[in-house]
Image (cartoon, rainbow over the protein chains, first blue to last red):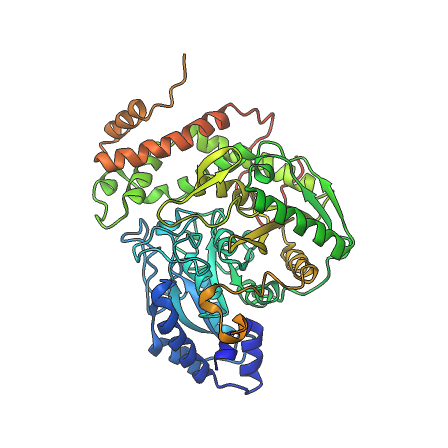
Length: 457
Length: 67
């Protein structure tokens, strides 16, 4: 059974479909693995075997028939309200059928657990949560990335083969990068979103898959999209690169690995690389942060802020109060900048198919001090990471993070972004990149996931 | 007038105007956030976005309509 647990999401689905394994036996094995590996990782904050078994018993035939998956603590389930990684959410929360839940259920999947997340979705590191931090399986003293920390760790440590996250400002791509996974941020509005407490308000958040590789993201993504994400090819791929802090103010090992990956992707696809102009990325990044932070302000009031749950983290409390002081003029200007950047991005995609830059500028920082050393100096990981993550959320375009190397035993990742609706092309390009490097990085396993066979012992 | 990024000017006055209570830890976190956010906020406000008018209820699943 251990071999089966280490298989891909599509491999597990095929095994159940072929009768090689019974779904109930697979579920029991996954629960046992969670019990074995999760205490050191804190990836999964709730399991519910009774409900999981009921889901399995009622599962229809589907592309994920009998396959256990994890869902982020950002989505309600019929038997559990989401907690958003926090002692207190500033929005109503109740058990219910979210869009991702229905999509997974209708595909025959079994939800086996809820994944940890950064408190209130307000961080790229995953080191703050009401449940305590999730730990990066590549080095448990390092940040797992956030805010979809638990889903990423659960897949990286092979507790499950697929997980559903959410991405409002990079929150699928950052943990994918830190944990060595492939993570897809879909085109805005394309993936299941119903039931999210911000569904009616947010113009940045999407659901999306976190998996070991692009083919698994295609499978889980198809379920979340409610339509097949057909495979094509990325032949003749026109790869755009942008000069500026997002590509140049990065750790040397990250820069080298990403440049090598871009060369390999160009060679594999027979494509070309061209520089594209995207001015004003820094104010666009701030505009994204302002939009994401002000869209939730309707739940805030002075009296509410004076009565916050004392179990909220000091950082969470301070940031919530600071949100009230953000100038309205800047929030309005942010909307103007959004349109400006959407036009510029659309113009860029007339000349290139994808825009490539590092997902994050440095490998996972320590949990206790999430700072990164860049050529420009020391920055908080949040300050540094948002530079690469924000544009896709601001404009609505899809983006994917793909592992492309290791530095000091920690994953490095390249991000590819494409025009609206070209999610399939990103998956094609990610698969081309996997072929180009012999699948070396998508098959690399962190220590908790290595077996005697994979370590050669 | 000279621009000030000093949190100890801005934050207590802002909190007081809303009647929001804050302890030393809150103020330290807010001060750090202010140091991080305020310079780019000023940069954003000064950005020349030309004659771009923000899309009204933009369809973010699609490219923007032609200007």
